[in-house]
Image (cartoon, rainbow, N blue to C red):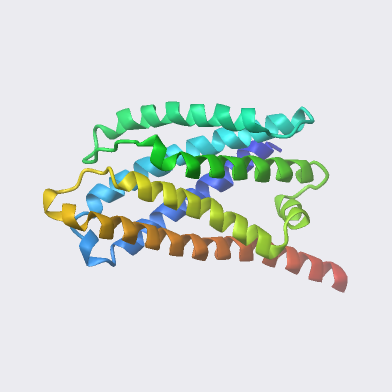
Length: 221
């Protein structure tokens, strides 16, 4: 079983769904109906970038766990440097879209560092648990209470949302909307915060419901 691949696929699926739901909810805001093509391109580019950064963090956590170590500051710094390299690649790709992104690292570094630290710690802990268990869900429920796991997923997405809010301030939009930029970025943040809470709750229910059903079935046998 390729546990790294599985965890990366789960993370990527979560982040893609998070981005898709965010775009869907932004369609309900009249201010975004004219701007949505621009912000859709921005969010799609940004989430691909984030999934790649997450993949590197998960792989580093797995390598550290296999070596019998624990992720530390050096791992975080290495991942932050790799994130900057990924930024540049995706910015080049973004040049063909109707969006111009300028990354101000002083605005996002604290969010990015916190998210990297959380992903490293969580992935490392899950890989360690998974060594003695055959199923991902069993590893999750052994490591976290239901509330802890939901809070973890919610914070991972919400920190990404905070970084996205900071980045969205640099998105090129029609001059007509410049005066409304703060309202636009606040709306993006509010929508992403709500989507993160809803999606974290749904994913947690799926994990813990199936575990609960499995345990109940075992007791009736």
